[in-house]
Amino acid sequence: MIGGLGVGELVIILVIVLLIFGPNKLGDVGSAIGRGISGFKKAMQDKDSDEDKDEDPKG
Image 1 (tube, rainbow, N blue to C red):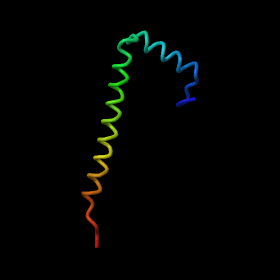
Image 2: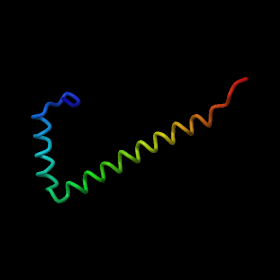
Image 3: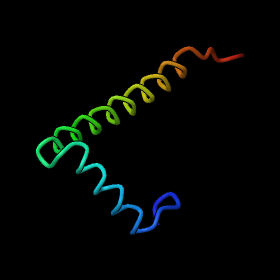
Image 4: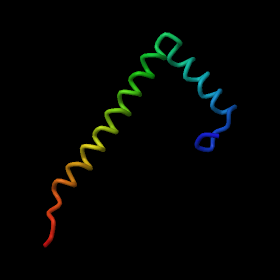
């Protein structure tokens, strides 16, 4: 169970996605989602490293 979804629900979602995008576009959609997630993770890591640099040690 992923996020409260069972196997049946995931299969239904997969069928709907296949109907909307078609099997030919599914690879393009998957790679675009992967690039988006990768970019988001990179931006979050850059944000965290920028915050660490901005902090001045008190002393």
